[in-house]
Length: 157
Image 1 (tube, rainbow, N blue to C red):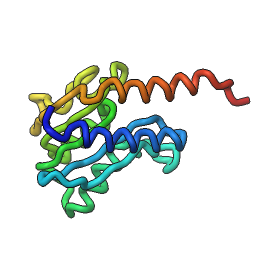
Image 2 (tube, rainbow, N blue to C red; image 1 turned 45 degrees about the horizontal axis):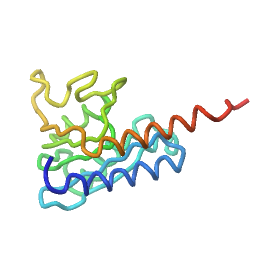
Image 3 (tube, rainbow, N blue to C red; image 1 turned 60 degrees about the horizontal axis):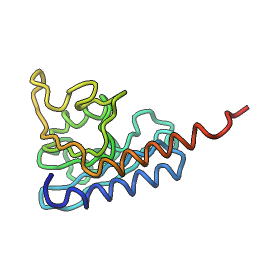
Image 4 (cartoon, helix red, strand yellow; image 1 turned 30 degrees about the horizontal axis):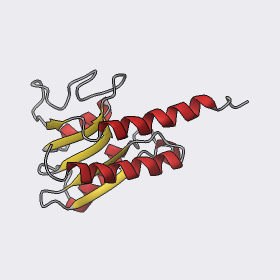
């Protein structure tokens, strides 16, 4: 963990809370440039956008790439509240992201370390520096509270 990781993760957590308030799974992400500047931030929006690819990491990468005018983002750090899924991990590799920092692991769908190891796979042409577990308890708690609330509501008829 480096200086600033908790500060940036707090921004990602705020985006995750906003996503949750809108009925989305509470995942947030932000992209930070090499000078320590915030390039993009997003929460999950697949329901709102009717887009299965509208994960927080994808939306933040898209916005950062537009700002940079390049699909490659070789000097950025991406912060995600939850370990990215396979789709998002693949996008991080394709964008040539330098570093990924995430909060809680995703034992069911994790594409970085828990289930698949895409971000530092020797079979791929790019490897990402990975820092897991930053503000893990807060990130995990947000996700657990969201799904506990969903389970407590009666099913729609």
